[in-house]
Image (cartoon, rainbow, N blue to C red):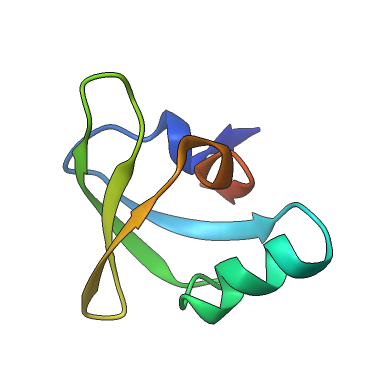
Length: 73
């Protein structure tokens, strides 16, 4: 299983599945990250946290723990 945390800078990836439960999963979905959407990885901080992505036309920073809950292809 490859997650958004594993994506390289400059990759455009497709969301396959969101892991997690309840409020955490709901928060990720509220940010616009849903199954089937394309996400472009813009930057990754030197220590890997946070990850900056472009999704649905806006920039978003995700914590490493949140990025690991997002399965990609």
